[in-house]
Amino acid sequence: MIKTNSLPVHGQETTKNFVIALAGNPNVGKSTVFNRLTGLNQHTGNWPGKTVIKAEGAFSHRNRRYTLVDLPGTYSLHASSTDEQVARDFICFSRPDLTLIVCDATCLERNLNLVLQILEITDRVVLCVNLLDEAERKGIYVDTAMLSQQLGIPVVGTAARSGRGLTRLKDVLDDMVAGKIVTTPRQVVYDPELETSINELEERLTPYLPDWINSRWVALRILERDYSILDHITCTRLGSYPRQVVKEEVALCLT
Ligand SMILES: Nc1nc2c(ncn2[C@@H]2O[C@H](COP(=O)(O)OP(=O)(O)OP(=O)(O)O)[C@@H](O)[C@H]2O)c(=O)[nH]1
Ligand SMILES: [Mg+2]
Image (cartoon, rainbow, N blue to C red; front, side):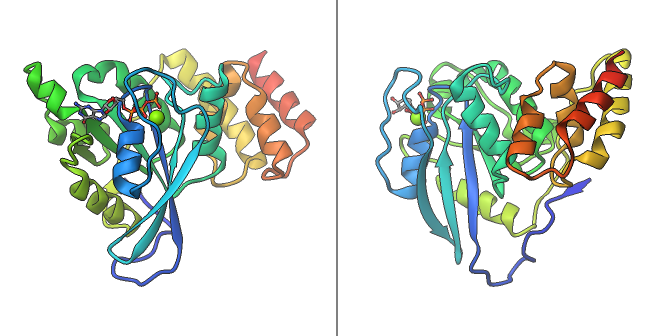
């Protein structure tokens, strides 16, 4: 069981401003959720790719203050486009207190790819299954309780355009930062050969990585030859290792 750590104990008054990253596929209603929660007017519409840079807004709920960061819509976090890189870097390196993923209830399976990728980075995740009204219109029923059990994270159903489910969503976000919810994120298990490489690389990398970063996720990226992760950690001075040393360790694992 992974507990949301370094968060205030329930009931404890805090002046901290909690940062929530808002992620999801394009056109699933992220900006609509953002506008509903913050009262701002981030542009929304029915074509993909509108939110191309991060937008920030604030709201308060139950004595706590939140900053919500609306990230560009992406199908994955492989950093192969600027949008993917902006979303990935924010979720990973800006260390938000929570990541709220919005997905489309009418085509859940397409959205779950991104959900599983984010769960490889962080355990502080809430899933918002939006467009429930559209799903109902199409005769699709989403069992949010079962989905929550399967993914090991809280799941809230919403129809953001009409505001349905958003009070419950705020309650769940607040329960998460209050440490009242324990998450057990579902991890993708790869084939045994790959798992062996991941474990070996992870073991070698761990001494060089800052303790807050998920070493398994870093190992996975490096196995994909995505060395930009190392560059990022080095250039933000969050790690305390010479890049060359890590590259040599990695090379040893990959030979
Ligand atoms: N019926 C219905 N429409 C919704 C709902 N939420 C959002 N929409 C509509 O879906 C369209 C896309 O919403 P956006 O909030 O712009 O989606 P987005 O995820 O921010 O899109 P990108 O920034 O392009 O990734 C808009 O026309 C919204 O009005 C909902 O719960 N039900
Ligand atoms: Mg948007």
